[in-house]
Length: 139
Image (cartoon, rainbow, N blue to C red; front, side, top):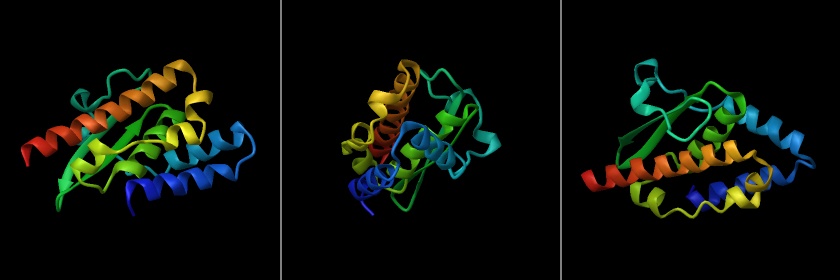
């Protein structure tokens, strides 16, 4: 699936929920499904700066595509990073760098996250694109 197809699927999934408590529960559920970062990568080098909670994100390239594993010490934040991993993992560095992440606005995250969580989400997006840019430059 392309990044846009995954985003469209998420938008559709979120449209089934009528209120934000249900959407938060879904985000928490997604956090339980995130590909977990290995303990050896759970160190300061992989902490996303700008998140109030601790969020670790590790990129690796396999067969020309970037795959992310992640974890967080906060359940909502873990769900948010899981959303980002779901959308961006398994694509080329160029696709990740060029991605327009419109689903964030479409599902209402920009309106319903606290300012600190919104900043954290923005930091996640920036870090994932920076990793992809660095990996693209290496290739």
